Length: 519
Image (cartoon, rainbow, N blue to C red):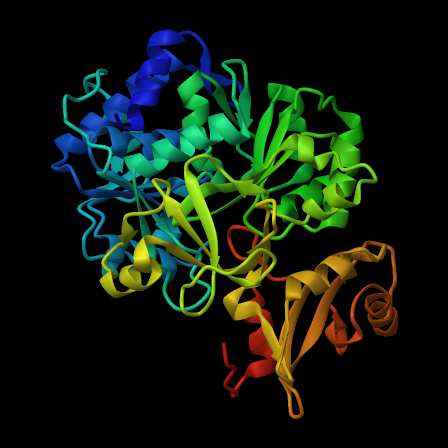
């Protein structure tokens, strides 16, 4: 069994049902299966061999879904690259993966031209639209190719997707995801998180090179459609319009996107009643913001925790548990990432990799068929990260007595002030309760006496004012005084990476220039 078979089976069972929806175009499952098979056959006709890599530099579009799936049906692996990265970052991923072909969109022609001369493995450039002279055109490449799947034997442990981590320190690492990993993820979604139905419509509001693309497999498995808004960026008015137009039922969003939808006045002007599931993850979702989201959109939220190394479905907090009411236990659990899903085991370990008791902080480690095969071309990093047969996530947290996982911070984000461990997530949760705060990031900054102290970087809500003294006093009222930030700075926005995560390293670098920070 391999994940490409999901599309073959959906085409057989639901041939005339919509598979891809983009603008006024509708592509049925019969047509989608034929197009993906033709692209897979084309890649093989270009000399591609099972085990080869095919990279993609495409915005959210139906050709992007075809490019995700076709290499997998040809026994190859796809290397999706986020379009918002710098050309040199794309150059690194292409050379590191050794991709033999690159499928790109015409709008990235000039972007790609900056690094073409440095690419060492790409033999074929395939352009959606009109590309550079000598490049292959996407649609003509499909012409004349067989519409049936190849008869290649594709095994569950064959490589399917190389997922490059966000690279917050040094070069990103390519997590090798097999068909078994993706099959497990799809099963976890259907069993624990989002039991999709044939009539559902997954709206790709987040990049398909990341969580939204990983969400297609369980939707395709049941014959549900994928739809694309009329925007390349996350623009709430157009996302809201697309929900209404396509009667979208489901989206994957990072918390920043949820907050942007909450702040948009356009949500009141459209019928959004079709939307029954928003699964969110990838960054902290603070309880105050989550309560507002449930009040606004209803109990349609599902929290998920995963990594590129164990995609999407390590733990889950289901919809029903987002209805907390005034129950203090349920309200507390909203700060958790839920409990381990069916096919995953989650532990908390100390520095010696020994399990710790409930409510004790440590590193989160996970095990199961969801966990990657290893890092591409990085045996030492693989051995360290997968030591003892457990994926060491680099996240700090704890499990309570009922098995709910609370993610406190990344290891590198923890602040050690005068020997005391401060967890930015805990401080951020408190600051977010202030009515004038839209976003916040807490970082450690150098201090001669304490080594480092906590600093809050705050984005105020539009039209509202708040002072440093008010933020610090607010923290003193709601948490131990030693945990409060020692300083507050107000910014117009927080820097984020291509996946919507706040770049705390970039924020810290402003204060640690020329100084060494212990991590």
